[in-house]
Length: 165
Image 1: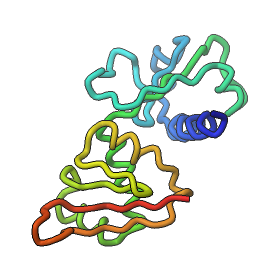
Image 2: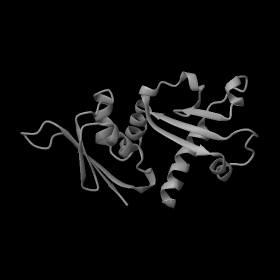
Image 3: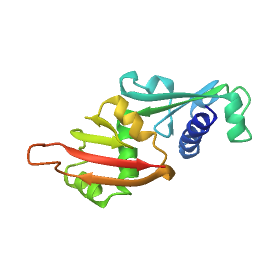
Image 4: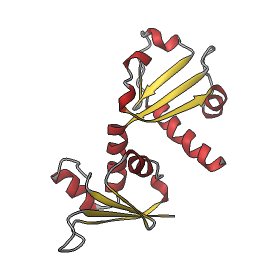
């Protein structure tokens, strides 16, 4: 449980630290701040159908991550869209496999028809569940990523095999 919280806080903190800020915007004075794909965003601009992951970082957790939290800030809502999660896992995994990186470049980042293997667990296709799993793999835990474009003469899908510590 503690390691899960640390990983979630780490992901949230990386989004918070990268967040772009325009201090002239009124929504920065709200009790909740919304970070959408690393950018501070007004709540009204967030479309619920695009949300893949929504994580609430409480005031106590914000204090654990950084000092100087402004008075009145109760929480930060970190939101990751499906498109941002796909982009991030593709960048992360392609840094371990030149073949996968070349495939993505050739096919415009389309890996929807893959079979994914993570430590021998298999998933076919790119459902929200699979995207979350791939997105949440910590880069430092990845040992190896292998890409096979064709499994056999009878199979048409590709396989991405990920091995972690």
